[in-house]
Length: 201
Image (cartoon, rainbow, N blue to C red; front, top):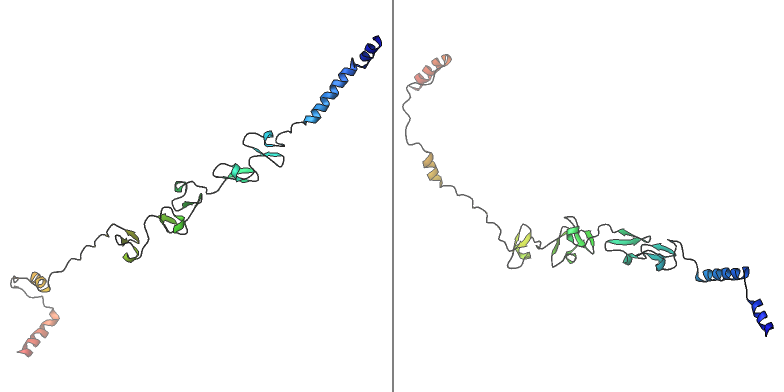
């Protein structure tokens, strides 16, 4: 019986042998679990920061444009603003429309909302026209657009008074006083005046 107990004690490690065995066990456990990757290197999305994705073993902002907020697109795994992006016409210049979330000039009526009309690149509620025939029955063509507002009436040209009345108004009704003196005679023409009078008499 004593011999069996002595064999069990001899089989148990003690001292330095026990420490070496513990170190070996720790080493095996570390290699079995694998060392964590150093950021931005990654194996899964869990190795990255919030709102980042593991793409080709590297933490990136996006995989595609669906990972980016509105108004941005994924380029080279980074979210960048989309040039000319808009949510409404208020985000665009005065001469452009917000079409498919991008500011640009309209090309036809189909790109305008609510039945509006595309006029020179912008959407207008007024329909362009050339004559009243282009407009509904209850509208008129005014300044190139159909409208229910009537065109301002032109002022009539004032009529002139009848010709005899104007002549009568301009005809003097008094005779000027008799002239008491004639026009001055030039010295060189006195003789000619006398001769002309004698010849006539």
